[in-house]
Amino acid sequence: MPRDTLTGSRIRERRVMAGLKQSELAKRADISPSYLNLIEHNRRRIGGKLLIDIAHALGVEPASLTEGAETTLLATLREAATDTEMSEVEFARVEEFAGRFPGWAALLAESQRKVEALQRSVEALTDRLTHDPHLAASLHEMLSTVTAIRSAASILAEPGDIEPEWQRRFNRNIYEDSARLAETSRSLAQYLEEADSEASETNAPQDELDAVFLKHGFHLPALEVPEASVDPATDTLGAGLSPSAKWLLHTILTRYRADAGRMPLSECADTVAASGTDPLAFARRFGCDLASAMRRLAHLPDDLLPDPVGLAICDGSGVTTFRKPLPEFPLPRLGAGCALWPLYRALARPMMLHTEVMEQSARAAARHRAFAISQPTGPAQLGDDVLFESHMLIVPEPKRDTSERIREVGLTCRICPQVTCEARREPSIMVASAPRKL
Amino acid sequence: MSKQVLLIEDEPNIIEAISFILSRDGWTVKTHSNGADAVELVKQRQPDVLILDVMLPGKSGYDILRELRDDPISAGVPVLMLTARGQTKDREIAERAGCDAFMTKPFSNADVLETVRALGAK
Image (cartoon, rainbow over all chains, first blue to last red; front, side, top):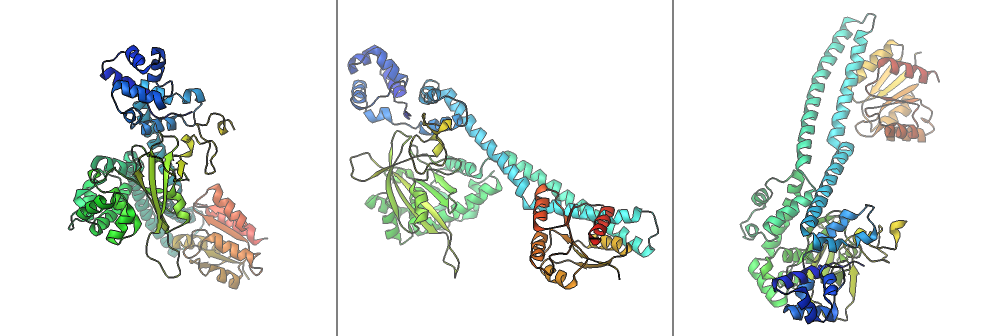
């Protein structure tokens, strides 16, 4: 059974900070010291009354013992264990590992990220060799030229007389073709050299964008003023990015500027004050579409909102084109997320605003409300299909009793503990009994 | 009357070289450089052998070959395909489309001549 929080580690930390001995705390909480020891090493689950008792004994809020930002770390560690021979028993000890060896765990997670980035580079390079139109065209051109040279040269080299007129002609052809061949091979060599340097410094373009937003935040004051222009901002923020990441960044910033133009910051603050993080309120107030409203909310400064909000955008193929994860609602770094997310289900019913309360089942069950809508990417064309993209705004939701349905969703299938799920597309490494042994 | 080869290829210097060696061997060589109207031309000319490049402007050699094989008027024309990529995949596509012989660039004049002779004798 997966547990995602390092509650035990936090109890230990708080106890040490409070200068309490394990035996003292155990006594106050009315449990045996050895049991407390197991709890502190994340070897026993803890919840309910005991958690409240321990929190009381430590003089802290119970919530402060169960909430943390380790979810991303744990998810990455689980990914590292995917496709390995690790036993389920060992796999289940991931939290204990992260709790007891935080430094090593962080190192392993970092290595995992690097491995993913390298895999991505290899895929990109393989892709390039197979599908690169420039490479294919260059090779074709070279082979054609070589063929022409070879044919002409062997006509000249063969024994027997050839009229001087023809000799001159083939000599001229060989001369011209060899010049062309020299030019083509030079440009091919140059292209390969550039491609090489580009690939060596490039992770996934999406990773590079993540780094940009991690550094500068999702709110960009440089684009908030009416006279702001996108190109210099792209150059400043995107300094050192690969061309493809820069292209993505430019697309995102162009939208940012357009959204900010329609929804000035001061009016956004008023709207948040009046209606909170409700995309419908934004759409009504500014007369804009819901996708723009969601993007605007995701790019507002954190201190303006009751809680920071997350956002995922995917295109019609389900590929994520923008992601702003939340500490307790991670979004997968590579590949697609959980098919149960409204983000994807919205694609099947475009133009309808889906809303749902979700709990990521592998998480410490933090609750979030999702708003999702799929909208055309451009204006309608006469007699032509429009393309759709889907936006999902993720808003943290307090846990309280509700009659509303709470949908259990995952992050990605591989690390999702749901045993029976219709949306499963690959076996989970977290379901002990099941398809792993197939 | 000498036998006729139709060469559909868009590289002028290859056209010139192949035309030369085949003419010297006694063939009447006609050439054409565009894929778009190639099918019509083959049906009109009814050559004894067709040499067909894969990468042509307008329409690919594979598509031309399929269309030729689909029409009884041109289904029987012996076809030698030329391609600048020697991958097994290309050969498979060409064979499935119905070519009689397949040659990758850069080829030798002697091979072309020999293959065209063999196809012409069918």
